[in-house]
Length: 469
Image (cartoon, rainbow, N blue to C red; front, top):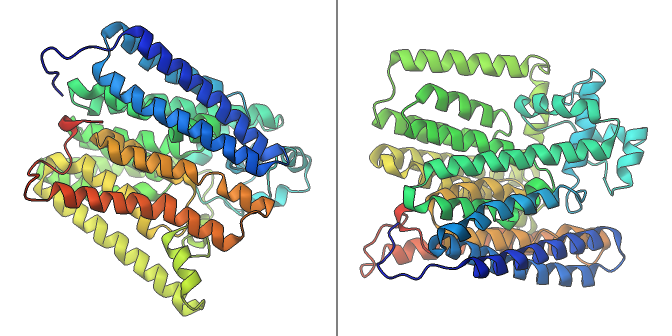
Protein backbone atom coordinates (compact mmCIF):
# COMPACT_ATOMS: atom_id res chain seq x y z
CA UNK A 1 0.00 0.00 0.00
CA UNK A 2 1.57 3.32 -1.04
CA UNK A 3 0.85 6.83 0.15
CA UNK A 4 0.51 9.59 -2.44
CA UNK A 5 2.81 12.53 -1.99
CA UNK A 6 1.19 15.27 0.00
CA UNK A 7 -1.41 13.06 1.67
CA UNK A 8 -2.33 14.65 4.97
CA UNK A 9 -1.68 12.53 8.02
CA UNK A 10 -4.33 12.31 10.72
CA UNK A 11 -3.37 13.91 14.03
CA UNK A 12 -3.53 12.39 17.52
CA UNK A 13 -6.57 14.42 18.67
CA UNK A 14 -8.73 13.02 15.85
CA UNK A 15 -7.67 9.46 16.65
CA UNK A 16 -8.30 10.08 20.36
CA UNK A 17 -11.79 11.33 19.52
CA UNK A 18 -12.53 8.13 17.62
CA UNK A 19 -11.06 6.14 20.50
CA UNK A 20 -13.25 7.86 23.06
CA UNK A 21 -16.37 7.35 20.94
CA UNK A 22 -15.46 3.68 20.51
CA UNK A 23 -15.14 3.18 24.26
CA UNK A 24 -18.50 4.89 24.81
CA UNK A 25 -20.09 2.68 22.15
CA UNK A 26 -18.76 -0.51 23.71
CA UNK A 27 -19.86 0.52 27.21
CA UNK A 28 -23.33 1.20 25.81
CA UNK A 29 -23.32 -2.17 24.02
CA UNK A 30 -22.39 -3.96 27.25
CA UNK A 31 -25.26 -2.19 29.00
CA UNK A 32 -27.68 -3.04 26.17
CA UNK A 33 -26.78 -6.72 26.20
CA UNK A 34 -27.06 -6.89 30.00
CA UNK A 35 -30.43 -5.17 29.85
CA UNK A 36 -31.61 -7.57 27.15
CA UNK A 37 -30.58 -10.54 29.26
CA UNK A 38 -31.80 -9.46 32.68
CA UNK A 39 -34.34 -6.65 32.32
CA UNK A 40 -37.93 -7.11 31.22
CA UNK A 41 -37.67 -4.47 28.47
CA UNK A 42 -36.42 -6.36 25.40
CA UNK A 43 -37.55 -3.86 22.76
CA UNK A 44 -35.92 -0.91 24.52
CA UNK A 45 -32.79 -3.01 25.03
CA UNK A 46 -32.63 -3.90 21.34
CA UNK A 47 -33.07 -0.24 20.39
CA UNK A 48 -30.14 0.67 22.66
CA UNK A 49 -28.19 -2.24 21.15
CA UNK A 50 -28.73 -0.91 17.60
CA UNK A 51 -27.67 2.61 18.64
CA UNK A 52 -24.50 1.24 20.26
CA UNK A 53 -23.75 -0.96 17.25
CA UNK A 54 -24.14 2.04 14.93
CA UNK A 55 -21.64 4.04 16.96
CA UNK A 56 -19.20 1.13 17.12
CA UNK A 57 -19.48 0.50 13.38
CA UNK A 58 -18.72 4.15 12.61
CA UNK A 59 -15.67 4.11 14.86
CA UNK A 60 -14.59 0.77 13.37
CA UNK A 61 -14.60 2.16 9.82
CA UNK A 62 -12.92 5.35 11.04
CA UNK A 63 -10.21 3.35 12.82
CA UNK A 64 -9.34 1.49 9.60
CA UNK A 65 -9.20 4.77 7.68
CA UNK A 66 -6.98 6.28 10.36
CA UNK A 67 -4.73 3.22 10.29
CA UNK A 68 -4.04 4.08 6.68
CA UNK A 69 -3.51 7.79 7.17
CA UNK A 70 -2.58 8.46 10.81
CA UNK A 71 0.75 9.89 11.92
CA UNK A 72 3.14 7.55 13.71
CA UNK A 73 2.31 8.88 17.18
CA UNK A 74 -1.43 8.54 16.54
CA UNK A 75 -1.05 4.92 15.47
CA UNK A 76 -0.21 3.88 19.02
CA UNK A 77 -3.83 4.51 19.98
CA UNK A 78 -4.98 2.20 17.20
CA UNK A 79 -2.89 -0.61 18.69
CA UNK A 80 -3.44 -0.04 22.41
CA UNK A 81 -7.13 0.89 22.47
CA UNK A 82 -8.62 -2.35 21.09
CA UNK A 83 -6.64 -4.29 23.67
CA UNK A 84 -8.05 -2.05 26.40
CA UNK A 85 -11.58 -2.54 25.04
CA UNK A 86 -11.09 -6.31 25.02
CA UNK A 87 -9.90 -6.18 28.63
CA UNK A 88 -13.04 -4.20 29.45
CA UNK A 89 -15.18 -6.95 27.88
CA UNK A 90 -13.63 -9.54 30.20
CA UNK A 91 -15.53 -8.03 33.14
CA UNK A 92 -19.20 -8.70 32.20
CA UNK A 93 -20.36 -12.29 31.98
CA UNK A 94 -21.71 -13.64 28.66
CA UNK A 95 -25.27 -12.55 27.92
CA UNK A 96 -26.14 -13.43 24.31
CA UNK A 97 -24.76 -16.96 24.34
CA UNK A 98 -24.72 -19.84 26.81
CA UNK A 99 -21.70 -21.60 25.29
CA UNK A 100 -19.14 -20.36 27.81
CA UNK A 101 -21.28 -21.72 30.64
CA UNK A 102 -21.53 -25.06 28.86
CA UNK A 103 -17.74 -25.03 28.51
CA UNK A 104 -17.57 -24.71 32.30
CA UNK A 105 -19.75 -27.80 32.66
CA UNK A 106 -17.38 -29.71 30.36
CA UNK A 107 -14.43 -28.43 32.41
CA UNK A 108 -16.11 -29.63 35.60
CA UNK A 109 -16.70 -33.03 33.97
CA UNK A 110 -13.00 -33.25 33.10
CA UNK A 111 -12.03 -32.14 36.61
CA UNK A 112 -14.17 -34.95 38.05
CA UNK A 113 -12.50 -37.52 35.82
CA UNK A 114 -15.40 -37.73 33.35
CA UNK A 115 -15.51 -37.39 29.57
CA UNK A 116 -17.45 -34.59 27.79
CA UNK A 117 -17.84 -36.91 24.78
CA UNK A 118 -19.76 -39.33 26.97
CA UNK A 119 -21.60 -37.08 29.43
CA UNK A 120 -24.17 -34.59 28.06
CA UNK A 121 -23.93 -31.03 29.32
CA UNK A 122 -27.66 -30.97 30.13
CA UNK A 123 -27.13 -33.69 32.75
CA UNK A 124 -25.67 -30.97 34.98
CA UNK A 125 -29.03 -29.16 35.17
CA UNK A 126 -29.87 -30.31 38.72
CA UNK A 127 -26.31 -30.28 40.10
CA UNK A 128 -25.05 -27.44 42.31
CA UNK A 129 -22.96 -26.22 39.37
CA UNK A 130 -25.97 -26.27 37.06
CA UNK A 131 -28.14 -24.38 39.53
CA UNK A 132 -25.39 -21.79 39.93
CA UNK A 133 -25.02 -21.36 36.17
CA UNK A 134 -28.77 -20.97 35.73
CA UNK A 135 -28.53 -17.76 37.74
CA UNK A 136 -26.70 -16.40 34.70
CA UNK A 137 -29.41 -17.61 32.30
CA UNK A 138 -27.61 -20.77 31.25
CA UNK A 139 -30.02 -23.24 29.65
CA UNK A 140 -29.24 -26.98 29.92
CA UNK A 141 -29.95 -27.81 26.28
CA UNK A 142 -26.60 -29.07 24.99
CA UNK A 143 -25.70 -32.74 24.68
CA UNK A 144 -22.25 -34.26 24.45
CA UNK A 145 -19.47 -32.03 23.15
CA UNK A 146 -19.09 -31.57 19.36
CA UNK A 147 -15.66 -29.96 19.74
CA UNK A 148 -12.28 -31.50 19.04
CA UNK A 149 -9.82 -32.86 21.61
CA UNK A 150 -7.57 -29.80 21.37
CA UNK A 151 -10.38 -27.79 22.99
CA UNK A 152 -10.98 -30.53 25.56
CA UNK A 153 -7.32 -30.32 26.56
CA UNK A 154 -7.52 -26.52 26.71
CA UNK A 155 -10.40 -26.91 29.17
CA UNK A 156 -8.02 -28.75 31.48
CA UNK A 157 -6.52 -25.34 32.23
CA UNK A 158 -9.95 -24.14 33.34
CA UNK A 159 -10.98 -27.35 35.11
CA UNK A 160 -9.53 -26.45 38.56
CA UNK A 161 -11.64 -23.27 38.51
CA UNK A 162 -14.92 -25.03 37.67
CA UNK A 163 -15.95 -24.96 41.34
CA UNK A 164 -16.13 -21.16 40.98
CA UNK A 165 -18.15 -20.73 37.77
CA UNK A 166 -17.63 -16.98 37.43
CA UNK A 167 -13.85 -17.37 37.63
CA UNK A 168 -13.97 -20.26 35.16
CA UNK A 169 -16.03 -18.25 32.65
CA UNK A 170 -13.61 -15.34 32.87
CA UNK A 171 -10.69 -17.72 32.41
CA UNK A 172 -12.32 -19.02 29.21
CA UNK A 173 -12.89 -15.47 28.02
CA UNK A 174 -9.24 -14.67 28.76
CA UNK A 175 -8.10 -17.65 26.67
CA UNK A 176 -10.24 -16.37 23.80
CA UNK A 177 -8.82 -12.85 24.12
CA UNK A 178 -5.24 -14.13 24.14
CA UNK A 179 -6.03 -16.09 20.98
CA UNK A 180 -7.35 -12.91 19.35
CA UNK A 181 -4.15 -11.06 20.25
CA UNK A 182 -2.00 -13.84 18.80
CA UNK A 183 -4.16 -14.04 15.67
CA UNK A 184 -3.75 -10.31 15.14
CA UNK A 185 0.02 -10.63 15.29
CA UNK A 186 -0.06 -13.47 12.74
CA UNK A 187 -2.26 -11.33 10.49
CA UNK A 188 0.41 -8.63 10.66
CA UNK A 189 2.96 -11.18 9.47
CA UNK A 190 0.67 -12.23 6.61
CA UNK A 191 -0.06 -8.68 5.45
CA UNK A 192 2.17 -6.68 3.08
CA UNK A 193 4.42 -4.22 4.96
CA UNK A 194 2.41 -1.18 3.98
CA UNK A 195 -0.90 -2.71 5.04
CA UNK A 196 -0.04 -4.31 8.36
CA UNK A 197 -1.62 -1.72 10.63
CA UNK A 198 -4.79 -1.65 8.51
CA UNK A 199 -5.15 -5.45 8.69
CA UNK A 200 -4.38 -5.48 12.42
CA UNK A 201 -6.94 -2.74 13.03
CA UNK A 202 -9.51 -4.53 10.87
CA UNK A 203 -9.22 -7.55 13.16
CA UNK A 204 -8.51 -6.16 16.62
CA UNK A 205 -11.13 -3.43 16.36
CA UNK A 206 -13.72 -5.69 14.78
CA UNK A 207 -16.93 -5.61 16.87
CA UNK A 208 -17.75 -9.27 16.22
CA UNK A 209 -14.27 -10.38 17.23
CA UNK A 210 -14.30 -8.31 20.42
CA UNK A 211 -17.79 -9.34 21.53
CA UNK A 212 -17.68 -13.02 20.61
CA UNK A 213 -14.16 -13.66 21.94
CA UNK A 214 -13.45 -11.44 24.96
CA UNK A 215 -17.17 -10.83 25.55
CA UNK A 216 -18.75 -14.25 25.05
CA UNK A 217 -15.68 -16.51 25.24
CA UNK A 218 -16.22 -18.63 22.12
CA UNK A 219 -13.56 -21.20 21.29
CA UNK A 220 -13.53 -20.17 17.60
CA UNK A 221 -10.74 -17.75 18.56
CA UNK A 222 -8.39 -20.65 19.32
CA UNK A 223 -9.28 -22.35 16.04
CA UNK A 224 -8.43 -19.15 14.15
CA UNK A 225 -4.90 -19.14 15.58
CA UNK A 226 -4.23 -22.57 14.12
CA UNK A 227 -5.63 -21.69 10.68
CA UNK A 228 -3.69 -18.44 10.38
CA UNK A 229 -0.51 -20.09 11.67
CA UNK A 230 -0.86 -22.80 9.00
CA UNK A 231 -1.17 -20.26 6.17
CA UNK A 232 1.72 -18.22 7.57
CA UNK A 233 3.93 -21.32 7.84
CA UNK A 234 3.18 -22.24 4.22
CA UNK A 235 4.15 -18.76 3.10
CA UNK A 236 7.39 -19.18 5.07
CA UNK A 237 7.92 -22.53 3.33
CA UNK A 238 7.56 -24.58 6.52
CA UNK A 239 5.13 -27.31 5.44
CA UNK A 240 5.54 -29.51 8.53
CA UNK A 241 4.70 -26.65 10.88
CA UNK A 242 1.76 -25.77 8.62
CA UNK A 243 0.46 -29.35 8.79
CA UNK A 244 0.72 -29.45 12.58
CA UNK A 245 -0.95 -26.03 12.97
CA UNK A 246 -3.82 -27.02 10.71
CA UNK A 247 -4.18 -30.31 12.60
CA UNK A 248 -4.52 -28.45 15.90
CA UNK A 249 -7.07 -26.09 14.32
CA UNK A 250 -9.11 -29.03 13.02
CA UNK A 251 -8.95 -30.73 16.41
CA UNK A 252 -10.32 -27.59 18.06
CA UNK A 253 -13.37 -27.30 15.80
CA UNK A 254 -13.57 -29.51 12.74
CA UNK A 255 -14.45 -26.82 10.17
CA UNK A 256 -10.80 -26.11 9.12
CA UNK A 257 -10.69 -29.54 7.46
CA UNK A 258 -12.03 -27.54 4.49
CA UNK A 259 -8.58 -26.01 4.03
CA UNK A 260 -6.60 -29.25 3.82
CA UNK A 261 -6.87 -29.78 0.06
CA UNK A 262 -6.25 -26.12 -0.94
CA UNK A 263 -3.24 -25.97 1.40
CA UNK A 264 -1.89 -29.23 -0.01
CA UNK A 265 -2.41 -27.92 -3.56
CA UNK A 266 -0.56 -24.73 -2.67
CA UNK A 267 2.30 -26.70 -1.13
CA UNK A 268 2.52 -28.93 -4.19
CA UNK A 269 2.53 -25.95 -6.56
CA UNK A 270 5.22 -24.25 -4.45
CA UNK A 271 7.30 -27.46 -4.50
CA UNK A 272 7.17 -27.84 -0.73
CA UNK A 273 6.05 -31.47 -0.85
CA UNK A 274 8.31 -34.48 -1.21
CA UNK A 275 8.35 -37.94 0.30
CA UNK A 276 10.32 -36.88 3.37
CA UNK A 277 8.06 -33.89 4.07
CA UNK A 278 4.95 -36.04 3.74
CA UNK A 279 6.30 -38.69 6.10
CA UNK A 280 7.47 -36.20 8.73
CA UNK A 281 4.27 -34.11 8.54
CA UNK A 282 2.09 -37.23 8.78
CA UNK A 283 4.09 -38.62 11.69
CA UNK A 284 4.14 -35.39 13.71
CA UNK A 285 0.51 -34.49 12.99
CA UNK A 286 -0.57 -38.05 13.76
CA UNK A 287 1.34 -38.02 17.03
CA UNK A 288 -0.28 -34.71 18.00
CA UNK A 289 -3.72 -36.13 17.20
CA UNK A 290 -3.07 -39.28 19.24
CA UNK A 291 -1.80 -37.29 22.22
CA UNK A 292 -4.82 -34.97 22.13
CA UNK A 293 -7.40 -37.74 21.64
CA UNK A 294 -5.87 -40.20 24.10
CA UNK A 295 -7.48 -38.91 27.35
CA UNK A 296 -10.95 -38.70 25.75
CA UNK A 297 -11.17 -41.42 23.10
CA UNK A 298 -14.27 -43.64 23.34
CA UNK A 299 -14.28 -45.05 19.84
CA UNK A 300 -16.87 -43.98 17.28
CA UNK A 301 -18.98 -42.43 20.05
CA UNK A 302 -16.37 -39.66 20.27
CA UNK A 303 -17.99 -38.15 17.16
CA UNK A 304 -21.64 -38.67 18.07
CA UNK A 305 -22.26 -34.96 18.64
CA UNK A 306 -20.56 -34.04 15.35
CA UNK A 307 -22.84 -36.41 13.46
CA UNK A 308 -25.85 -35.08 15.33
CA UNK A 309 -25.27 -31.41 14.50
CA UNK A 310 -24.44 -32.33 10.90
CA UNK A 311 -28.09 -33.00 10.08
CA UNK A 312 -30.10 -30.05 8.71
CA UNK A 313 -32.70 -28.79 11.16
CA UNK A 314 -35.26 -26.01 11.32
CA UNK A 315 -32.74 -23.52 12.62
CA UNK A 316 -31.11 -20.39 11.24
CA UNK A 317 -29.12 -21.46 8.16
CA UNK A 318 -29.70 -21.78 4.44
CA UNK A 319 -30.68 -25.43 4.84
CA UNK A 320 -32.82 -24.65 7.89
CA UNK A 321 -34.74 -22.00 5.96
CA UNK A 322 -35.28 -24.45 3.11
CA UNK A 323 -36.83 -26.93 5.52
CA UNK A 324 -39.65 -24.43 6.05
CA UNK A 325 -40.61 -24.43 2.38
CA UNK A 326 -39.92 -28.09 1.60
CA UNK A 327 -41.93 -31.07 2.86
CA UNK A 328 -40.39 -32.15 6.15
CA UNK A 329 -39.49 -35.79 5.83
CA UNK A 330 -36.47 -37.99 6.39
CA UNK A 331 -35.86 -38.15 2.64
CA UNK A 332 -35.82 -34.35 2.34
CA UNK A 333 -33.44 -34.03 5.29
CA UNK A 334 -31.08 -36.59 3.78
CA UNK A 335 -31.23 -34.92 0.38
CA UNK A 336 -30.40 -31.58 1.97
CA UNK A 337 -27.50 -33.13 3.82
CA UNK A 338 -26.17 -34.75 0.64
CA UNK A 339 -26.62 -31.47 -1.23
CA UNK A 340 -24.71 -29.57 1.46
CA UNK A 341 -21.88 -32.11 1.36
CA UNK A 342 -21.71 -31.95 -2.44
CA UNK A 343 -21.73 -28.16 -2.41
CA UNK A 344 -18.95 -28.11 0.18
CA UNK A 345 -16.94 -30.63 -1.83
CA UNK A 346 -17.28 -28.58 -5.00
CA UNK A 347 -16.15 -25.44 -3.15
CA UNK A 348 -13.12 -27.27 -1.76
CA UNK A 349 -12.13 -28.71 -5.15
CA UNK A 350 -12.57 -25.33 -6.80
CA UNK A 351 -10.41 -23.76 -4.10
CA UNK A 352 -7.72 -26.42 -4.53
CA UNK A 353 -7.61 -25.82 -8.30
CA UNK A 354 -7.31 -22.09 -7.78
CA UNK A 355 -4.53 -22.59 -5.19
CA UNK A 356 -2.72 -24.80 -7.70
CA UNK A 357 -3.00 -22.28 -10.53
CA UNK A 358 -2.52 -19.12 -8.46
CA UNK A 359 -0.29 -19.78 -5.43
CA UNK A 360 -0.72 -16.20 -4.25
CA UNK A 361 -4.47 -16.72 -3.92
CA UNK A 362 -4.37 -19.14 -0.96
CA UNK A 363 -5.63 -16.58 1.57
CA UNK A 364 -8.46 -15.58 -0.75
CA UNK A 365 -9.36 -19.22 -1.32
CA UNK A 366 -9.50 -19.89 2.41
CA UNK A 367 -11.56 -16.74 3.02
CA UNK A 368 -14.04 -17.73 0.29
CA UNK A 369 -14.30 -21.28 1.63
CA UNK A 370 -14.87 -20.15 5.20
CA UNK A 371 -17.57 -17.67 4.23
CA UNK A 372 -19.34 -19.79 1.62
CA UNK A 373 -19.41 -22.83 3.89
CA UNK A 374 -21.21 -20.84 6.59
CA UNK A 375 -23.51 -19.15 4.08
CA UNK A 376 -24.38 -22.14 1.89
CA UNK A 377 -23.56 -25.47 3.53
CA UNK A 378 -23.52 -25.18 7.32
CA UNK A 379 -26.50 -27.00 8.90
CA UNK A 380 -26.86 -24.26 11.52
CA UNK A 381 -25.74 -20.69 12.11
CA UNK A 382 -24.83 -18.61 15.13
CA UNK A 383 -23.27 -15.16 15.04
CA UNK A 384 -19.86 -16.38 16.21
CA UNK A 385 -19.58 -18.69 13.19
CA UNK A 386 -18.50 -15.60 11.26
CA UNK A 387 -15.29 -15.16 13.29
CA UNK A 388 -13.21 -17.43 11.05
CA UNK A 389 -14.46 -15.79 7.81
CA UNK A 390 -13.86 -12.37 9.39
CA UNK A 391 -10.24 -13.22 10.25
CA UNK A 392 -9.50 -14.53 6.77
CA UNK A 393 -11.34 -11.70 4.98
CA UNK A 394 -9.32 -9.22 7.06
CA UNK A 395 -6.15 -10.96 5.88
CA UNK A 396 -7.17 -10.48 2.24
CA UNK A 397 -7.80 -6.76 2.69
CA UNK A 398 -11.37 -6.94 1.37
CA UNK A 399 -12.59 -4.39 3.89
CA UNK A 400 -16.00 -3.60 2.32
CA UNK A 401 -16.99 -7.28 2.50
CA UNK A 402 -15.54 -7.43 6.02
CA UNK A 403 -17.80 -4.58 7.15
CA UNK A 404 -20.90 -6.16 5.59
CA UNK A 405 -20.24 -9.54 7.21
CA UNK A 406 -19.49 -7.95 10.57
CA UNK A 407 -22.54 -5.69 10.73
CA UNK A 408 -24.86 -8.42 9.47
CA UNK A 409 -23.66 -10.91 12.08
CA UNK A 410 -24.00 -8.37 14.89
CA UNK A 411 -27.50 -7.29 13.84
CA UNK A 412 -28.87 -10.82 14.22
CA UNK A 413 -27.12 -11.59 17.51
CA UNK A 414 -30.05 -10.45 19.74
CA UNK A 415 -32.74 -12.20 17.68
CA UNK A 416 -32.52 -15.44 19.62
CA UNK A 417 -33.12 -13.50 22.84
CA UNK A 418 -36.24 -11.96 21.29
CA UNK A 419 -37.41 -15.47 20.43
CA UNK A 420 -36.87 -16.54 24.05
CA UNK A 421 -38.96 -13.55 25.17
CA UNK A 422 -41.71 -14.60 22.75
CA UNK A 423 -41.47 -11.44 20.64
CA UNK A 424 -40.33 -13.43 17.61
CA UNK A 425 -41.58 -16.89 16.79
CA UNK A 426 -39.16 -19.54 15.54
CA UNK A 427 -39.90 -19.09 11.80
CA UNK A 428 -39.38 -15.32 12.04
CA UNK A 429 -36.10 -15.75 13.90
CA UNK A 430 -34.86 -18.31 11.37
CA UNK A 431 -35.78 -16.26 8.32
CA UNK A 432 -34.53 -12.92 9.66
CA UNK A 433 -31.22 -14.44 10.77
CA UNK A 434 -30.72 -16.32 7.51
CA UNK A 435 -31.57 -13.38 5.24
CA UNK A 436 -29.60 -10.74 7.16
CA UNK A 437 -26.55 -12.70 8.31
CA UNK A 438 -26.14 -15.13 5.38
CA UNK A 439 -27.89 -14.03 2.22
CA UNK A 440 -27.05 -10.32 2.43
CA UNK A 441 -23.27 -11.01 2.64
CA UNK A 442 -23.64 -13.59 -0.15
CA UNK A 443 -25.42 -11.07 -2.36
CA UNK A 444 -22.75 -8.47 -1.62
CA UNK A 445 -19.99 -10.95 -2.45
CA UNK A 446 -21.66 -11.87 -5.76
CA UNK A 447 -22.13 -8.19 -6.62
CA UNK A 448 -18.54 -7.42 -5.70
CA UNK A 449 -17.17 -10.25 -7.86
CA UNK A 450 -19.42 -9.31 -10.78
CA UNK A 451 -18.31 -5.70 -10.55
CA UNK A 452 -14.61 -6.62 -10.41
CA UNK A 453 -15.03 -8.88 -13.46
CA UNK A 454 -16.68 -6.16 -15.54
CA UNK A 455 -14.71 -5.12 -18.68
CA UNK A 456 -14.40 -1.52 -17.45
CA UNK A 457 -12.86 -2.68 -14.16
CA UNK A 458 -9.87 -4.84 -15.13
CA UNK A 459 -8.26 -4.74 -11.67
CA UNK A 460 -7.85 -7.83 -9.50
CA UNK A 461 -10.95 -9.17 -7.79
CA UNK A 462 -9.06 -9.42 -4.53
CA UNK A 463 -5.67 -7.98 -3.82
CA UNK A 464 -4.18 -7.54 -0.41
CA UNK A 465 -1.96 -4.83 -1.81
CA UNK A 466 -5.09 -2.90 -2.78
CA UNK A 467 -6.39 -2.43 0.74
CA UNK A 468 -9.01 0.31 0.62
CA UNK A 469 -11.88 1.64 2.65
